Image (tube, rainbow, N blue to C red; front, side, top):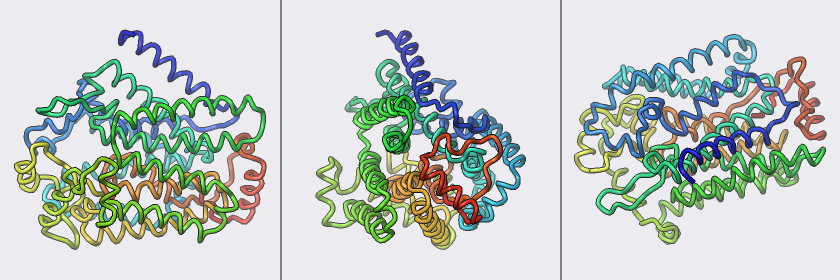
Length: 475
């Protein structure tokens, strides 16, 4: 099949996925397309890279660290436009937004500290621009969680983005190799990137949208009603999950694949209502997953597992980078300022040592320590602790949405052991914020049929909780 014909076929396939997953009785606002566009950019390439048809590992081709300081005016303008429109939407949703913000103090405190850290950055203008992007993630999450039909907005937020990025990644890999593949220097061995610019990012979006598809499949299989209503989503998300598994195989990103398998298993187990209502069991499962991940990576008795997965004990050189950058942190208490460590003389020194020009620590917790110090780590820990409490409440009140939130929460914690995802525009950070956010119970607006896409038992539970005016933790 030639590339032109393949493009037509894949375009029709994408349209088919949208049609199969469509629920006419569900009502989400058109504003939901704003965070979908944001997440699509975060999970693929910047607009300037798309327009320039930039191939894999575009960032690694930068010859000088100074090129990171300026950035792309086009990307900045596009993201600013999306952010401005999103803020206008939130202003119109004023009461719902205010109630949501009041219940999420730890998240606001962490974002405020990130903004404050700009003051001691060596490059405050660059740090400020990067914080605006980081703030944009929170704005997009607010759009999703304050949607009039919020119980369905998260489903469409994940599904629509996945329906776009996963098929396009396959199209690029198979029919547009200049865009979807790269080659290792000297040995000329290919690696696969799809719509992203490196294989680890491809693995990351497979992780995020793969978990979304597993959740959709669980909901469709558990759904009640006419068989024809369930067939469409089942077909669409089975196809998407098949694409995800193929892309996992091509990407060879073991961190993302292991996180996907562990979080999917957790989601399946906690979808059993009798188990989800037993907090001790859930705590043990979450603790076991995190301990297994941590011990396999960092403790001596877990190194055999790392080698079994085809990785060396140094985690492909990550441990050497960790030792180097931690020693370069001149202010352990507050760090170098928001997203400011990998700038200037520090990154020049690191690039002189590594030909592949790293621009992150490949560990989210070390990355926070470098930029925000021990204080930043403490505030992030506060977000995690409070977020986990929110998720446990959600799991008791609404198992269906609580399982997804728990899976994304555990995924974010484990994924950041070997990758940096607590940063600017990153899909893992976006779904993490969705997972830990407490959403206050607000009445459904008139015209929204909440029973259209809820099981009877779930609908009854939600109506009962609404009468008590308690805080309902849902996505």
